[in-house]
Image 1 (cartoon, rainbow, N blue to C red):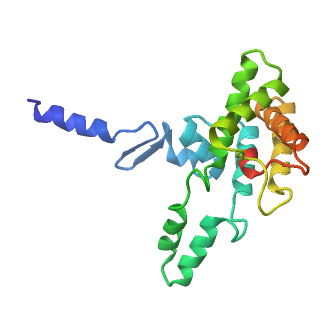
Image 2: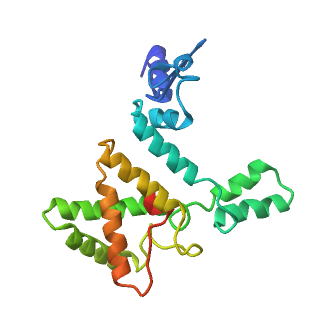
Length: 213
């Protein structure tokens, strides 16, 4: 049987996290005193620090900031936004409305960016195995459609002929790649998938915000 001191330490361990440490009069985020961060970091830089455990380079922080700006409310066509607006008309408070919206986020709505990254990773795995980019894209797309259906996450939009957010984000990433801030491999993969889809369709199937983020 454990001693009371051991049990107390086990309880403290359960609540410990590498993200934040708090003591009376002291708050540290990833080891940095909060007073050194307030007024120094942007919100995007703070998110980066919390998620990755390090302060971002200025160029990377600008890219994250741009992605956050692009992802703000873009009209009632999005299911989660429509649900939140409908909830408010029922007389509930803002907390209830936001909770209603969050509850519909998943693979079908809200999860496309993660799925797009999975698709890109498949392409990169093919290129790492020695395949040229165009062949790697074709193999990854065919494999994805065979397993999950014809729709590819990150491409096409049911409302916009061209998602107006995606080109701006891609241009920023390509500029950052040219400056050596990021590698830019994922942009090349996304462009190659976009080209393949366009060559197989009567109309363009451009990258959307999920594929760009």
